[in-house]
Image (cartoon, rainbow, N blue to C red; front, side, top):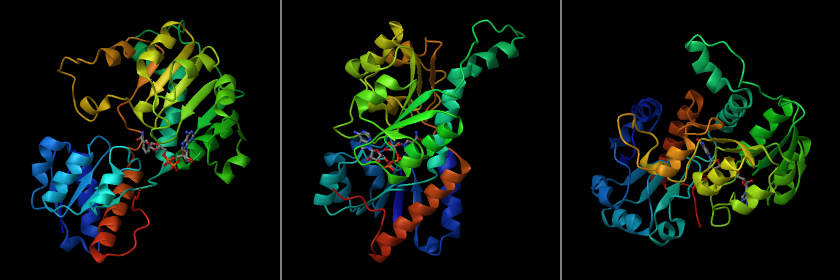
Length: 333
Ligand code: NAD
């Protein structure tokens, strides 16, 4: 089986090659690495392949899936959990096998979420730069304790639960909101409706998938419902947040802090070195001007443990497809 691997970075290659060498069916699988993201104009790179292996910013809408199908592709292997970038209905209609990696170290993303919260809460991003310049003044670095604060977790699936566990360990009162709450959450906190969570939380952390129903769930109205000066954290998907509305809330001081690992328009920025480029995205550049905003470039998943898991599960999914076996990670409409 020949697979075109899109959006390949050196680290993807490292972990996929290691897992391929160790996989029992590794000899029957050939990977063709492509740096380009998958989109209509790059579909030709999958010519002659049986499958494509894709990541969060590859774009698999109906025209792309139809073009892949015409060129002989029969399987879509996702190296991620979220599948908002794939038209699952269209894939199903075309008879394409689509599989994902549903849970690769939820702790990786949960721990990154805490890294963001603690950084903003204690101004370590500013202290780091100051101390390196020989400035040991504390003025402007005043933080606040996490202990005793209320933290609201929106989406109590695998990552939300892992985040709630850590927050509870810090001594936070944890609130959760989820239309299908996990029973394990009862030991960690209290389930409430979204308006209550927004009104009572000092920290709101988003861990629900991007769906039509969750698109821009944080907007002008929901920001106004938040506790003044609260912190908003998004390590899930960028489009959960209406970024211009968040900028307005930061300017009015209604929102106290923002930490994001994902951004709605991240596709043209993240995963590449743009340090020598002029960045045209004025909304993103406005965010960069706030001292109380912290942005990382979609690195929540990026730990050795998670990368190994992603590669191993991806080959498990490929083996299922090759053998025509039931695949627990298959994504269906
Ligand atoms: P999951 O499927 O285990 O949990 C998602 C939870 O969200 C479910 O319990 C679901 O019921 C809930 N949900 C659905 N609609 C909701 C709504 N309207 N309000 C509140 N909750 C709602 O998924 P997970 O593994 O915990 O991952 C969560 C998200 O994290 C993924 O969708 C993905 O977008 C993102 N993610 C980000 C990174 C990263 O590197 N930053 C890595 C992996 C996953």
